[in-house]
Image (cartoon, rainbow, N blue to C red; front, side, top):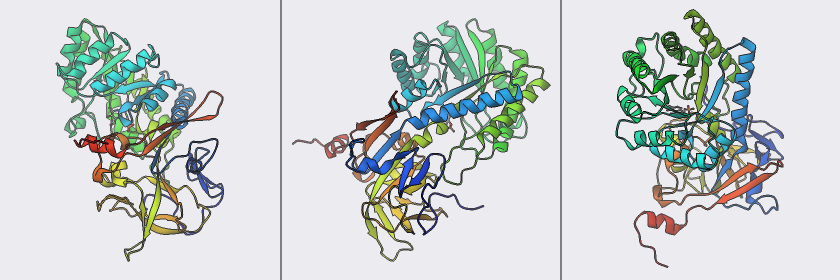
Length: 477
Ligand SMILES: Cc1ncc(COP(=O)(O)O)c(C=O)c1O
């Protein structure tokens, strides 16, 4: 297998109008993110604010575009194969819980998935703002043992937003819901992470999420027998960033079969929720046919349900990475070229790779890296270094086989990391104090107004005093 393609891999310039993928292209030697010329953010211009580097770019129109694209694919396949259920797009907010992201997913009509008590507060704020409207389903995943703040908060929130579906992770989560006496629709979560040959094998999965087969049936019986709970949803998440559609559907096969058996006994069970896992272009060699995947999945569900003599269910996905990976970019300036007889020249950037994208060093994850300017000039193979003093603050990641090429010209060279909008910011932490006390970068949130023009909201980064105060220093002027 070849290496992941993380950028331009040649010494010759990038041809004009080259399309790297569906959201990145070259034009007149400059990089465009979904038609937006990123370099304009660093120049004096009447149309855009002039921003410093490093800079986080949040490009909200890409979120709505992704949600709409997936809805359209499901609608097309449902039509093509005569599938009897509906599709429900839910946003898994753990991928990026920033206000502008949640506001955008709800604005695009997505249902909402959450996993902790602070998530409930976010939901509450969104109800009050009229963005989380009554028909929207809120799926409450995560651990919610009896007496926990999250369990109590879900019960309180139910009184503000009726369409709340707690997903049972463990049998002990059911009694507080019954005790509330509120009429809850409920989900049950299957232990099923990874590949399994049949429904019994899933019990061997080494996963702390979900219930094994016996408890799934016990939970369903318990819910059915309760006066105020209705079994509505079955949750089975088998992995994340699953790159082969056949694997994705094969791994879901045993849960689909259990769903069909459950539905025979509990006809109120109407939603099959496959959770997350939808892959995204983290690198430029990404090749996943979403339409073909959805066709395969819905056909498999249809066939299995027919075999068990039950109606095909509504289908729900909780899209985290898919919703948000592409809308986020992080731009740095090359501040030093250091040729110290290392294997390749070092391009030192004005920020930290490891604190901005923890998965790059923790999981050796690849992201797309491209220059914003000089795409029409010669390139050379280099390595990127962050300004921290940490030997892991480098890119490509240490164990990577992927070469990184950047322009030879480095005067005012700006370099962007792309597909970083999911998880990276949440894992690295927002604000707070970071490795080598580097302050957090400024941010620009770009959106599209009703008239089609772009809008720019600048969010200040951290000042030295913010960092010092976080660390307990008393800052006096
Ligand atoms: C329960 C649940 N749903 C959805 C997701 C989102 O997954 P992804 O980012 O692969 O879409 C996760 C991620 O961990 C999850 O735990």
